[in-house]
Every structure is written in C-alpha cells, then in structure tokens.
Length: 117
Length: 227
Image 1 (cartoon, each protein chain N blue to C red):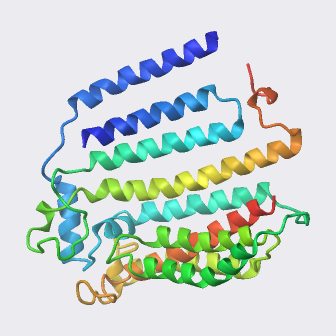
Image 2 (image 1 turned 90 degrees about the horizontal axis):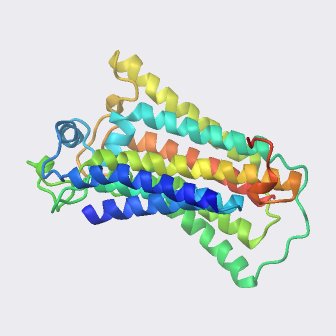
Image 3 (image 1 turned 30 degrees about the horizontal axis):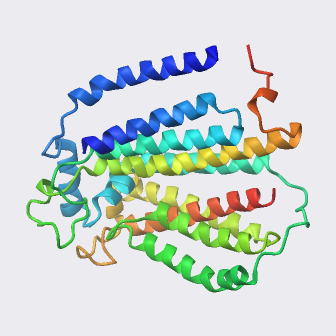
C-alpha cells in the first residue's frame, strides 16, 4: 500500500526530528524507536502485493500454485530480524543512559559536552 | 533558534530525497524470482508451512545466527555496564492483585511462549516471538516484586546450551550432507506437510533460538530491574 509507505516515511521524519531537537536522553531513545518502526513499516509495505495473502501455506492457499497467491516473504523475514536487533540496541542504549545518570545525575544531553566540538 | 532552522532544513532535504522514490515506486503484482523459489522450495524441499520461517531459519540461516550473536553481544554489553553490587531494598510493595495474578499467569505465559516457538513452522510466530513472550512472563514477576531473585546459573546454562546446540546442528549438516549445507534442516526426516513433526530440523532450531532469546531477554530485564 502506498499509504503505509507514506506513513512509514512520516514516522521516520518525526523520529529524526525528535532525535535532533530533544535534550532528554530518554526522549532521544524514543525518537530512535520511532525511526525503527518507520523503517519496519516501509520494508514490509515494499513486500506487499495487491490482493494476496500471508506467506503461510494453509487452507487459504492452493498448494499447486502457491507462489502466485502470497505476498513477498523476504521483507517479513528481514523485519523479523530488524525488530529483535532494534530491541537489543534500545536496551543497550538505555543501560548507557542508566550508567551516565549514575555518574553525572543528569539526563540532559547539554550536560555531556565532552564530545562536543 | 538557528539550530532549529538547520534541523528543519536537513529534514526538508531528506524529504526531497525520499520524494522521487515515493513517486516512482510501483507495486508489483507478481513475486520476484528469488521469492517464488523460496515459496516453492519451502513447500517442496522443506515441508514447512510458514515460508517466513523457512527463509529465516534455512535460506538465511547464517543471518539468523549472526542476529542471535548480535543479541548475545548486546546482552553481554548490558551485563558489563550494569554489574550491580547489591539490589536496593527500598522498593515499594506492589498491589496484591498484581502479586497473585503474576503467580497465576507466569506458567500460562511461558506455556504460550513455548507453544509459539514449537509451532513456528506452521503458524505465524517462531523463536524470537516465543522468546520475547517468555521474557514478558519474567517481567511480570519483576513488576510484582522488585526484589525477586532469578537463578543466574540456570539462565546462563540455558542460554549457552541453546547457542551451542544451534551451531552444532549447523555443523551436523556439514558433516552429514557435505559442503554448502550448513544449517540444512533435512538432516532430520521431513515428516508430512502441515503436521507438528515436519520441516526437519526447523522446529528444533527455532526452539533453541526461542530458549536463547528468552533467557537473554530475561537477563536484560533482570539487570535493568536491579537499577
């Protein structure tokens, strides 16, 4: 669907805007998650074929010419991978934030100027 | 202020880069060659109902192994960052409703998770989804009682055994079927299409992935719950 493709891009832009403008570290991570979701929606909607069913060969699909009746399985498999990686990366980022908060008692990115140029 | 303007300009540039892609995008009404081969191969060669599962576990099995490795690395990183000395004992008590419900629901949620990864080759779902569901059961336990202690030995044992057996099954394919068959599921008889015992080694591999993901995510939740 072209609409889900557009929705994915809108989510991607919103997430990037949030990541670039917010000062709170946790909000930056939330922006990252929104970008993540946007890319997942884009990838899945690229694999969509009009009027076809899910790539699971049950009673809804004729065994003889199954390849003509299902949507593309590869984007789904890729997104399955991407979701789990996104989860792990988010958890890692949050634990960095926990560590930073323990050290400096601040969640604002303005207080971490060591890498600023 | 000038900052904000630059950010908006950058995003505008990004939108302008995306627009041609959206304008020229045309949806196919046929599967590509590779996808059709995957669908036919999943039915004829692997006896697996769920094509996504056969792509994830068999055709792109090496990618999945890499993904499991990334998950393991993230868990190791979190374990390194959040090695806590002692849990804070000041946590509030949660309501009795939550405590009772968590005791009751724990087993049911774990059972549903096991069901999902055992049926990964038949229905939507699989190792990753089942593993995440198992981890949510333990999250419920942490929510009910913040001081809950998990047996780390068992968690680590389950994690390392499932990871090791996953790689061993891959090498078994090399050993039994010759070159180019790392992670080939046909080392086990394929069974009949649509039954629980079908698709060769796919349910075994996906169960191992499920156990590994479940134990890793439980470790992550445990570390984060300790903070």
